[in-house]
Length: 213
Image 1 (cartoon, rainbow, N blue to C red):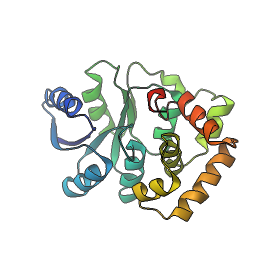
Image 2 (cartoon, rainbow, N blue to C red):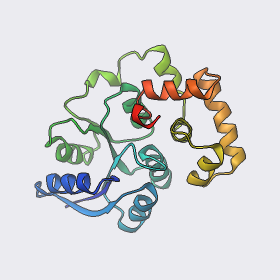
Image 3 (tube, rainbow, N blue to C red):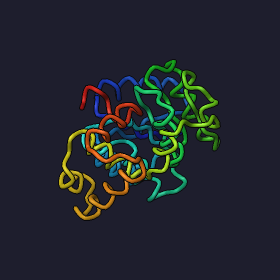
């Protein structure tokens, strides 16, 4: 039996995912979580075979959970889900160690397929994602974004959502100096000089939703 941890801040989404997964005889949802903090505690407690996490959640997001889990266990299998199919977002997740990426517009049976496939050691992309995006040449802006670490992407996301550096430090359990240093590195790597430019770039690459800005 493949043991799964579900992470999404919407209970209805978690319930839907759970029903879809448990239609497959080989999959059991052993725990659910609504935040990164809850999810990490559940991961440590239940040691799931596969963790399925939404990318966008209040506070710290799924990419930060991916970073924390992979730091704890480099062999952990984490599937990322998102309402967006941005190649930049998919690449960031895969380069950060995600075992696969499933969009919320994908056919329902893709979720169980993803769990079964990543258990074999293969990566999985949902049917509505172009398999070529793993090898296609990225545009100049995407190349810049690809330089960022998962932690830098999470700090960028929080800043673009309007959080102050101090709030980012509190949410990520970092010192203010560390966040400030990362903020400087992010701007240098992305080649932007203003907060507005950071927000616009985050919107273009679906690091945040336009509705949040």
